[in-house]
Length: 503
Image 1: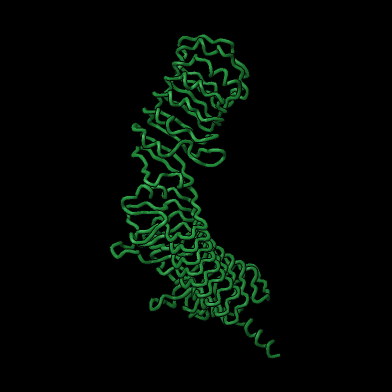
Image 2: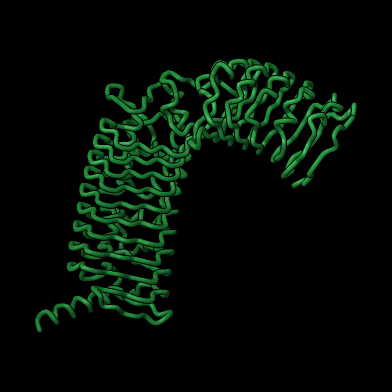
């Protein structure tokens, strides 16, 4: 609520007034003597107020003040007024702009709470200033900016010198600002933000997470260095780009007590030619429950995406790890021979909505049948220029059940392009249903002679919403509500091609 007070009386005398709320006044005019009659004032709130604050606060009439709230204000260039307020215990500068470092903070020896979240600073507040706050219990430095760059407003190392600190909120956007031996203090309430980590053009970078003590690593995660590990639980976006020596994200098994990337939403690995495996063992996948988008591009040595092994013989593999992944894009991965080497009972992709695969020429198939049965929300499936693919869904060896049904309840768009070895969608003899399929596009798949190898040939494939079918530029329009036998469509096209090639 905006108060919209334009001006205050020259002097206001009140011997008992302890709390004065003057927040949200767009242009407040106040005399330098206004506070002289408020000797008992303990709490002053000037949040989001504009006016002659430098003159008002610069007069030593607020010597007994205990709480000062300047949330959303432009703090005066001359911050000497802070030095007069030696009784201040709570100082809120949240969302404010500080034209110069408030060096007078060092005088506030009774300060117990300092909130500088979302503040803008011209330069770093020196460590010696913060060291004067010996009684500080709560420090909030979440999402602060130095010259428009996200960076803590104070030297991070200084927090370990605040012996009474019980609550700390801080944003670390660049881990290089941390001293090599830095350990975060043991506090009751702790919030740290590192939302995006971009690793780019690091020529000797080999591994992000490593449990092999003999390997040189980029981020050390040995037992004695676990405090650095605490940076990763809040990571939401990880981009690894143009890393010529990167071999994997994770090397070796991760102890169950370690919280790693539990909030990661986006992972992109681009142009990392030596990476043969992401290192996504099951015990790491169990931590990636919020991963929504996975992008892998130009990783020429990558052979496997999801590893069904635990990575450690002593680590049990739990069943039913449902991931939040809804978008997977795999492009130009010439060595990729498997997407997932684990059955659907181990890794569930129930939330996957879009899968696009291009130029993965060693792939023989996309899914085992048990994984395909978990794709209940898949809406778009596009496969381009994967010349090694023989079928999209593969039966799992002796466990094949020809009478079993595979349902793609949400699939709307299916595009298969330039798959020169594709024989059919599935050769396993399953019965398929596509209740939401609207568009089928099959282009440059010369070895595709039928769509699915259905054991019960008299069973019509259910696709009541199918609107159009395009096979090698030949478009067939489908009447609304009509189910089409896709095998017959493909077989008729093959016959037509053979007929015209002979004529």
